[in-house]
Image 1 (cartoon, one colour):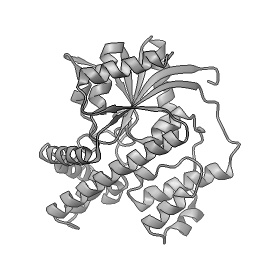
Image 2 (tube, one colour; image 1 turned 180 degrees about the vertical axis):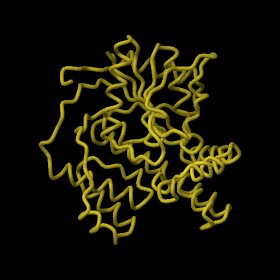
Image 3 (cartoon, one colour; image 1 turned 120 degrees about the vertical axis):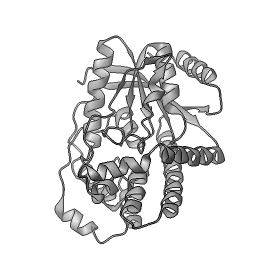
Image 4 (cartoon, one colour; image 1 turned 90 degrees about the horizontal axis):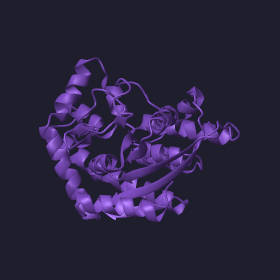
Length: 311
């Protein structure tokens, strides 16, 4: 694998930024396939809450091929290690068929794990560390996580369990610096779609209202009926966390909507903070105004790739 090289376009941005539609139109234009870099869209039966928007992959009546969506069952804890493995397999599959590759998503850690070639090491649970961390608040756990120099994704820390797992992984990487699998060379042209803060907030609230009308509460209800526990759903954060609290009578509908709306705004802010961190650490992101027309976005992306000589 060390001798492999891949060229691709990475399309990133905060939630509700319209990335998927742009990626699909671009894929149609340049004969590419899309790899999803979203930490929750890997789960089957979790569609509305994760914003899969499969219709966005349809261009001119044709479904653009996509990868790493609906690949594991809900309740499973899919890891960055598994994402790297599956993403590289998808990249090899796409390239063998002579297609171009577009990596598209908003999970900063997943994207950076590929672009920077983080180590491919599955990390086992550490019961002693978990016992040590159990008494700490979520805020304290996030601070501990931020103190590690290894890969961590503060933007995804919605629950204590997720924060504890992230600390577990970061500590393992710190204590085992020489464990490193070979990683292919990735040549990526990284494009970001960006809206001003107020526009982003408006788009997030509007999309949340649309998803509520589309049956997002019923989706979570269905997952509970299928045997998932409230604790399992709380692990996935955001929509699944607050709607589960509503369905288990911990909060009422108004509290659920308001809390979820605020949490998604905060999540989007953390996503942008993550992307700025990537830039500070050397990843060149070419930002495109989200208010450009679709055709203008495509022309801008293709122009950037030609100018920067993506190979």
